[in-house]
Length: 482
Ligand code: HEC
Ligand code: HEC
Ligand code: HEC
Image (tube, rainbow, N blue to C red; front, side, top):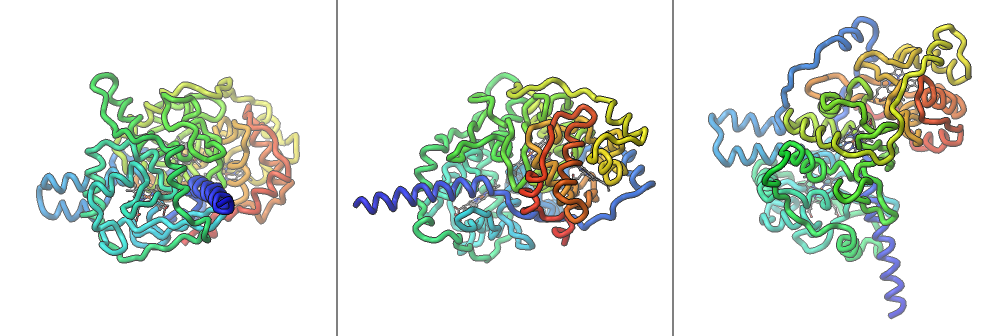
C-alpha cells in the first residue's frame, strides 16, 4: 500500500512535471511554413519597401480552399456561413500551429511538443472516423474544449490550451465543431503514442492537475450593455487567442498565474521564456510593455509582424503568420484596445532617447569594444544612432525588447538571426543573418550590453557566460529554411 502511494505520488509529481513542461514547451517546434529565404535587401529595394504604403486592410481567407468551394456554388447557405465562421475561429485559436506536423496534412496532428520526460504528440483533429474526431458528437467536442476530457474519458496534457478555450461562447463552439467535422479534409494519419515511459505516462494525475488549476468552465455570455468593442477584445485575448499561455507568468506547478485581467495584474505581464525567447508584457506599461504604442501600431504589429517600434520573432512569428493576419480589422482593433486598457504592473519611466552614444559613434570614437563591434557589424542596418530603417530594419533605440531585465531574446537573435514573418500584406520576411559563427561569447556579450544600454535603452549588461548558455540551443535561422 505504502509503495503504491509512493509510486502514485511519484507518478503524480512526474506527470505534473510532464504536464507542466508540455504546457510550457508547447511551442518548442519549428515554425510550420517557413517563407522562402529572401535575399538580404540592399539599397533601392530597401527604400522601396520602407516607403511602400501598407496595403489597405484586406483579410486573407481563413481557409482559402473552403472559400473557393463556397464561392463556386454561388450564394452561400446558412450552413456555409457557419463553416466560414468556424474556419475564422480556428484561425483566431491558432489550432493549425499545434495540430499540424512539418509538411503534414493540416490538422492531422503528429507535431512533437518537447517535455523532459519525452515528446508529447498533438492529435489528428480532422473528420477521419478512425484516427480523427469524425465520430465525435458535439457534446464530446465541447467537453474536450472546455474541460480537457476526451471522448475516451482521459484528460489531455494542458499543452492543449483548454483553460483558455473554456471561455468560448456556445455559438462559436458550434461553428468550430461544424468546421472540424464537415469542412476540414479528413486525413487517415494515425496518432502517435507519446514517448513518455510508464508509469510517468499515466494520465490520471492530469485530471488532478485539471481539478486544481483549470477553472470551472463558464461559457462566455456577451455583456448586455457597456463597451462592446472592449468586451470583444477581452473575449478574443482571454479565450480563443490564448495569448496568456505565453504572455502570462506561470507558477511552479506551471499553471498561468492568472487567466483574466479582472483577477490579477499578473495577467499578460510577461516573464516566460518560450522556445528560448523571452516573452514581453502586453500590459500598458513602459520598460518592455506596450505603453506609447497607439492602437494602430498594435494592429499593424499583429497583422504584419512589425511596426515602428519592433519586429516580430520567435514564437510570435507563428501567431502572426497562422492566426492574427487572418483576423478582421474590427477584431484586431478590439484586441488592441483591450490590451491598451490593461493597467501597468511593472511600470517604468517613459523611454527617452539619449544622444551620447550616437554622437560618439558618429564622430568615429566608439567608447567600448561593444560599440566598435556594433558599428562594424550592425550599424549598416540598425544605423549608428540606433533608429533603424523604417519598418525594414527595426529601430533598436527604445525597442521594447531591449528595455527589460531579461536579455534572452536579444542574445538569441544575435546568435541565430531572425526572420520577420511573411504575411499576405507584407510578403517577403526580411532576414537578419546569424552571428553565432562570426562572434565569440565575449563579443556577443559586449555588443548585447552595448545595444541594451546605448541611446537611453535600459536593458542592462550581460556576461559571456549568459551568452554561452543560450548558444547551446541556438539554431541559426538559415538552417530552418526549406
Ligand atoms: C499549443 C498547442 C495547441 C493548440 C494551439 C491547440 N491544441 Fe488541441 N491539442 C494539443 C495537444 C498537444 C493535444 C493532445 C494532448 C494529449 O494527448 O494529452 C491536443 C488535443 C486536442 C483534441 C483531442 C483530440 C483527441 O483525439 O483526443 C482536440 C479535439 C483538440 N486538441 C482541438 C483543438 C482545437 C479545435 C484547437 C484550436 C481552437 C486546438 N486544439 C488548439 C495542442 C494544441
Ligand atoms: C506561442 C507563444 C505566444 C503566443 C500564444 C502569443 N505570443 Fe505574443 N509574443 C511571443 C513572443 C516570444 C514575443 C517576443 C517576440 C516579439 O516581440 O515578436 C511576443 C511579442 C508580442 C508583442 C510585441 C510586444 C513588445 O513589447 O514588443 C505583441 C504586441 C504580442 N506578442 C501580442 C500577442 C497577442 C495579442 C497574442 C494573442 C492573440 C499573443 N501575442 C500570443 C509569444 C507568443
Ligand atoms: C542585414 C541587416 C541586419 C544586420 C547587419 C543586423 N540586423 Fe539586427 N535585425 C535585422 C532584421 C531584419 C531584424 C528583424 C528580424 C526578425 O524580426 O526576426 C533584426 C532584429 C534585431 C533585433 C531584435 C529587434 C526586434 O524588434 O525584432 C536585435 C536586438 C538586433 N537585430 C540586433 C542586431 C545586432 C546586435 C546586430 C549586429 C551584431 C544586427 N542586429 C545586425 C537586420 C539586421
